[in-house]
Length: 165
Image 1 (cartoon, rainbow, N blue to C red):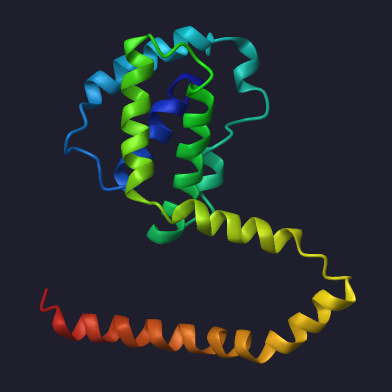
Image 2: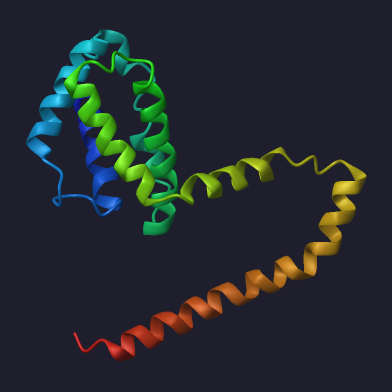
């Protein structure tokens, strides 16, 4: 995949995982809009390939649909942040932004989950007060961890029994 097609690929993946693909989305129009955006950003410049892709490689590690929806909601927010600094009088930028806003609104809790992960990463586990709190919560955390796989297996086996595919 060339660097010029990364943005279309990422946007297509985002559209698919957000369940928006093919509904009201005009993919041909979006391709045209992205081509114009590439020209605006001079994305054919030789430095674009340096360091590899910034989004598509991150998607490899997120395998479950709900997991991907979390990372994709963050990627959508980053695209929107980038587009907010551009000339919004251009129709192609408005079209792309509108599609991305629609997608962002379809998953309001995705950013909350990302924030939770970022907050966990910031915890100072060398702090004695934090350690005390963590020890107090250890049994509850382990309970949830032990319960999770069992409940997932039960749900899967129940759905397999119901489905006569």
